[in-house]
Amino acid sequence: MKVLVPIKRVIDYNVKARVKSDNRDVDLTNVKMAMNPFCEIAIEEAIRLKEAGTASEVVAVTIGPKASQEQLRTALALGADKAIHIETDEKLESLHIAKLLAKIVEQESPELVILGKQSIDSDNNQTGQMLAALTNRGQGTFASKVVINNGKVNVTREVDGGLQTVALNLPAIITTDLRLNEPRYASLPNIMKAKRKPLEVIAADSLGVDLTPRIQLISVEEPAKRTAGIIVEDVAQLVEKLKTEAKVI
Amino acid sequence: MKTLVIAEHDNGALKPETSKTINAAVKMGFPVDVLIAGNSLSAMSSQVASIEGVANVLVADNSVYEHQLAESMTDLVLSLSDTYSHIVASATTTGKNFMPRVAALLDVAQISEIIAVVDADTFKRPIYAGNAIATVKSLDSKKVITVRASSFDLQGEQSAAVVTNIDTVSDSQLSSFVSVEQTESERPELTAATVVISGGRGMQNGENFALLNGIADKLGAAIGASRAAVDAGFVPNDMQVGQTGKIVAPNLYIAVGISGAIQHLAGMKDSKVIVAINKDPDAPIFQVADYGLVADLFEVLPQLENAL
Image (cartoon, rainbow over all chains, first blue to last red; front, side, top):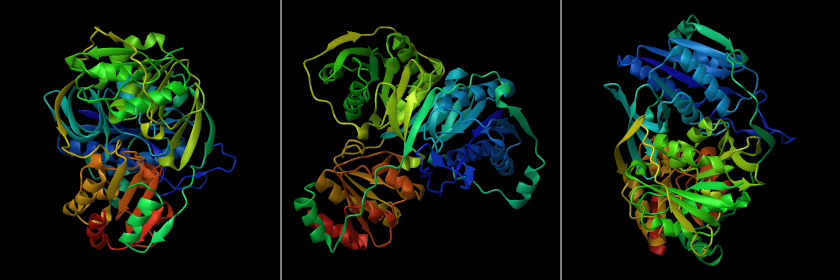
């Protein structure tokens, strides 16, 4: 079984995003970039399926500028067998990404596609569901457990108020939630080996997908700031303040 | 131009997110119809019909929709989509699941988790874990939108709108329901509670979360947790408050043993009053707290329970 894992290059998890002074976007100049954390979970799950003998090949794909190849090399170092870079300098939307990925799904025919549930930059939480729609596949979003047997995949999903398990016919699309697994780190020998693994580059505009923007970014602002209040001495003072000043209890 | 809102419910009860999402939909400026899809919905249609601003209630009551699986929900919404310019749902795990599927099949973008309606085409939404607020304009003729319910108010009441049953049933064969494990709780739901008390890594283990129970009982509060507490395995993920968990905006939020990572703040900083209890005076949570108590939580939690 072939598993396709789309990944995204985003601002590093530990870096606080800052808004540009002209309010046109977030400033990413000289900011540390990394693989989106939910995508790391997706890669890890695919590699575990391969280690368990369920998957035969893991293909990582990303869409973005040349620098995104760093994240593909990371995916290869973690255990992906080959990588595909769909190169573009345009800032694409989830629908564009899903359409480009649908082309790769057509080309690679993976039985399973595993994606992160959302990227920590645009926070859209859309691409996996859109890809499932465009390829007419069942979807198991926000997965905390994935079990494959007899041409089906059972996905346990993190839903409001508990866990829901659905059975999907293969081929299917899965998006990862936090508790699915704990991603490994790449070892130095594997990082060296990754440099020799195949990485195919495809120009985004060669795939015949309409990449016209559907959303216009008007402005980006800092959120309203909360200001620090007061430090109370003890529990008695806290309760007194909540009752008489804030009037919330 | 008309707006279709998909109601949030668990078959048994209508969720407050529905009314708040209708509040957002009304601000888009067009008549609002509401679709309720589920199983054995009897009382719910009249409840929705009495929410202010609702023109028509459409009810798809069939066992196929009991678990609101994305594939079947999408087929249902698409079958109704022709006459609507705006299709709107709450950004709950249900709405987030099927709405992008609807958008892709309509060949339009989705605008996720809006926190404000500027006009019929323009919306504000948080990006980068709430560290920035983007104002975006949809260029598509049809808009597919999910709403962060905690950013909108509950709607008032009205005399009942017209209720119509929808008989077409689309049962997608792509997926099927297997099981559900509901977290059993007598407490209010996190996103609906007026008081939330959350524990973080400072709680040290899952057993210690019991220290929050007495306080939650007295305040009628929901109990939440930081991602650090979830990642450490103290409590299940559905208790997580934060950018990657639930977004809450109660009247009172009490953060216990939570340092205040960006990702947690993104989930609770719109709370009306924030209390922080942490033994580290430099914890970032104090920068957003209205009332801070620098103390060992194991000493002060029993005191707090007694003082309430």
